[in-house]
Length: 449
Image 1: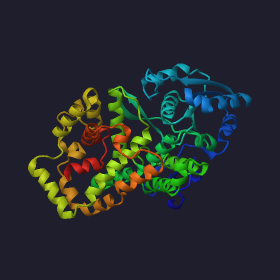
Image 2: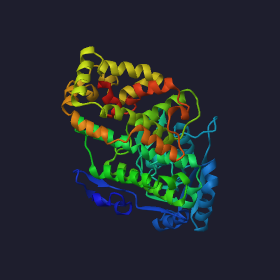
Image 3: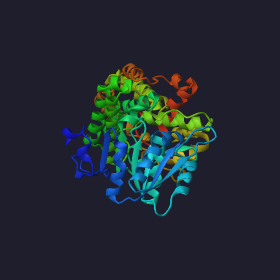
Image 4: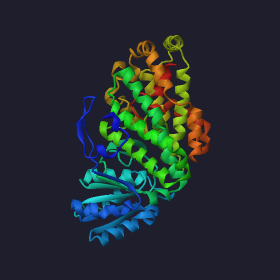
């Protein structure tokens, strides 16, 4: 199976028992990444018996592709209507309660399939509503900006807290290369940044396996690696925005999405770099600042995570053991009480949601430390005993300078200040963004070093 990890077609509609011991299913039936892919959607819908479609876009993506798709559907004798999601008072669209209600109000009993025409935000809104209403979800990317087109989770902002909610994978993806190549270069660079974050995401997943026996699928990991390699091997074409470049980027993003489908969660493609990105996003929402491109944030955050990995890789087994011992002796080590205090101080009005995410909600008030893995009494000894393996994981991550250079070649930002992230916000996020998800990452490991 591993020899086909860099291909898309063999996995479509597949169901099989993997070497990891789990049965994997890929519900996506078709992926079309080519010139003129937009024209393939109406005949696909007709063949599948979807005679009534709802096309969902925002103002910009309706103009870029929605109008053309609407006319093509009507020419194919399909009943098609459009839902153009309105922006908020800041001229932005977020995957939040407001947008979900907008789409729900456009749903009629006869709609059989919903086509998301746009990038990540529109896809997240549509996949959630399609899942909750039992409709088929079709994907029409207008920019190769995120790896979420093929995935199943919907990252939504609910009550100001960004959480990933299980939803629907698309039944089919129609990625028109002419359309993707016309996307703003900043969005193409954002897709590259999202892929670059896989270096640190995969390493974080390996830390979880090494320290906690977390389930790990080599096929999903290899699929992500192969998608990343496609992008790195064609970085110059991606930077130039050529059709070859956007094809390879879109293929890489799709492979990353399928890797998440295989295991049913985002671990193969999302780690500490995404937690940092999500924290910045939530803080920007609280401060009513304009949103940043997801992939741009992830790329910059990956550079920050790579710096932590580089520092950890420089520690010998003896130095790591001494660092862990010093943390224990000083009392400056992770504990349930310390985690709770940091979350309450760092997250303010959404602290209760973050506490619950980390197993520290009301029901866990008197829970022993052993029930919170990151505060397990056995963890310091485990880190010291397994340091050689941990160090090899750390060495697998490219240097922060290598990642920054790659981002800049693609035309994207590489430093926090280029995103408008102030030094104070960066420092705070490096302290408490590890709590955005209850997963083990390099940020949590560095609490001991």
